[in-house]
Image (cartoon, rainbow, N blue to C red; front, top):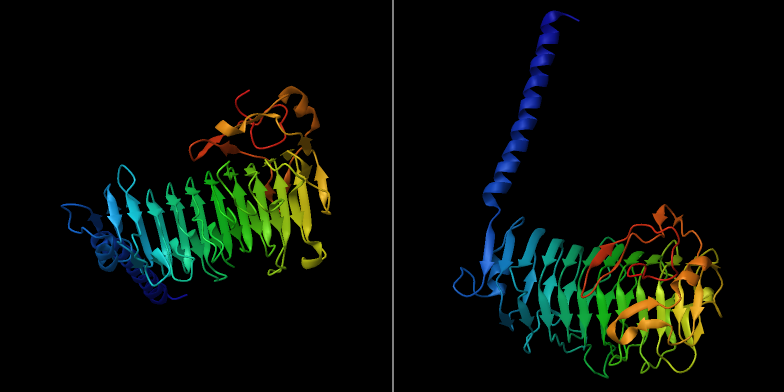
Length: 399
């Protein structure tokens, strides 16, 4: 190659590299220059959340100071945003207001993180007013509380959307008859994850219902409690891939539905369906027979895999009575064999004996079925060091 040609190519390559570097630095500078922190609260630039929602730009941070925000509903249209409560959790009370007839907050279509916010009292004309209505995009909710809403979080039906919930509380469904109030209702989205979260005191509807294509449900407390009257505690009506690992799931004596975990009741909606139920504590306070798990094989694909490993079922009922599938290491116990469910102590009696019945949980589709944590009150998780011998169920610590 002639020297002058090589020099021209080297010069061109050098210019291209400098151009790319300059563009990257400019983008970073632009982001840092234009990303602002907007504060909401008494004496701040914004006293209303709705005003901050209109003013915020992509990439901004919105910080909400402690206090009650009544009727301060909003739509968030940004493509990327962090919204967080500062200090003591700010409380958003619907107070008769509803955004777009849907929710206290509507997430339009973005990558949004919400941290440390409380939502209360959402009511809508169609009886499914939500604390948060998640329309599309990616939403992560952390350390937040949803009380007395017709639906805590309601996710719409977009098959590219993702919802992640960490360390949050859903409780006190309103006692309405017009529509079923679910504490958390996930539509037909691509992916749903929930961990370290507590659900209790439902009414007629379900504690947790998800139609997502992929569900990862780990280390939660879905226990309705003596004041609850929920139907299913966990409902996966359209199949999909579901990994249900290390949860405490229990129904109250007042429920009118004998099923705790339901899978495939409304027919398959996805190319693949499989349920992996491992190391869950399933508890029924009913005085008549309970189906700890019910699957609808006639509504699911013929190759849908159902696997139950090392689950502990406590109460009058059966885990496998009407379900096909692969079951091993599961242990049924009669009522009264947990330490004290009334104080949320779900440790089983006779732990030294129970350790002899479990099997290696292993993995499925490259996903571990062995717990790496367990639920910790009031919300959250604590890590687990694998013991020499596993107990059946979700509770491993405290012995």
